[in-house]
Image 1 (cartoon, rainbow, N blue to C red):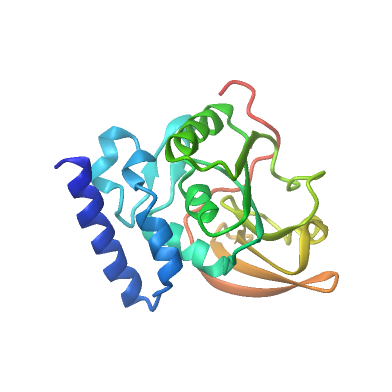
Image 2 (cartoon, one colour):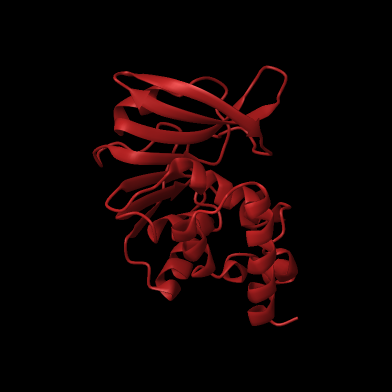
Length: 217
């Protein structure tokens, strides 16, 4: 099956599944349609680009299934003019979609290999409003002011309170949280004053967040 057919059929199937879950956000779905997911998966996994399952990528990492990727962006409720921080660039797919919805996206990853590959994809798609960096994201991104939205794609073991000061008033952060038993739950945190209002959502397959930049990759 060629890439164009994979894109057409894969996107149509994804939309049907998402609508079955009640997700009918037209601007978001348009942004996804404009971001060919086959560009972000390894060629050997092109047929799985729009599937709900995990897809392995370089550096021992993975990209979440298409359904989960779109659901996480939906939960952020991104609006035009907003600044978004993403911790965990991975393939770059979620940053690319969010860049079509927000004013500016800052994305970082501990693996320089992943950052370089993602940046090449952003350039190919003409997405000039993404700033990608090889950095330690465990403490967010300091020195860039506050963000309206933050998406994290690795799990915290406790409430990431140090992110409060990096969120604008009323800002939203979506991140996985891991409990003592190792179960991982997606959580939406809304900044109210100097604290977070927490909403636990559903189980997700993310690994614990690892601090520091990777030395070898």
